[in-house]
Image (cartoon, rainbow, N blue to C red; front, side, top):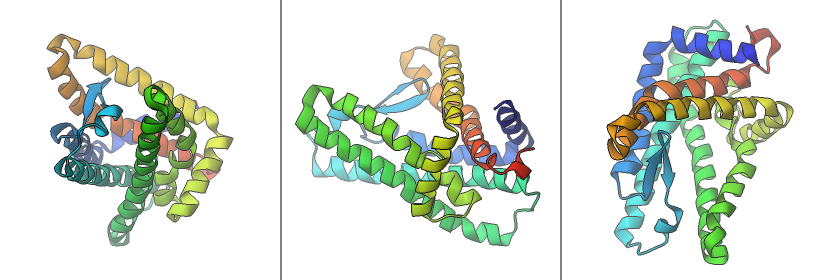
Length: 244
């Protein structure tokens, strides 16, 4: 596992310009829900949805804003994920990013968008059903559902870009890889928790409201790109000849 972390740091340090470009999409993706009427709050430099708030006193306008903001947020997030995985893929294969790759950006981004949309839609559906059926434990039900769904979707974006698989096959590939290398997922979670926690603690002196926005932007520019790189490096590490 140490070589995966080393490769992630190497990719991160060698491609700062491209990563910074991708980070712009990440900042936009995470600021859209915060600046819209989407019921979110900030913690550990990340967004969390006030699940119960979604189902209370919603108007048609609220619903439209939530749907549109979610779609645009997912779109920008998809683009950032694709750009970072393309960087990993072509650094490993030593092939230059040519015009054919640029033309494929739309296809990759569309497929990754579909993956993220499916994950979001399923979770929101489960959240809605559990809210009306289970009441007070709806949040727990949604959290459990997210954990169960994660193996199906976690590596799917990397599979789409690196292996050029279709959505259906990318989901099955993600599940297969997670089951074989479950330690990678645990490592990713541990690294993510440590980095986000340290970042959050650094900006606490700014005050709860301001620190949340500052941390969100800093994490989107510095930490989340690294976590996406680590995710992609873990996936491409399945190929022995590309491990170095």
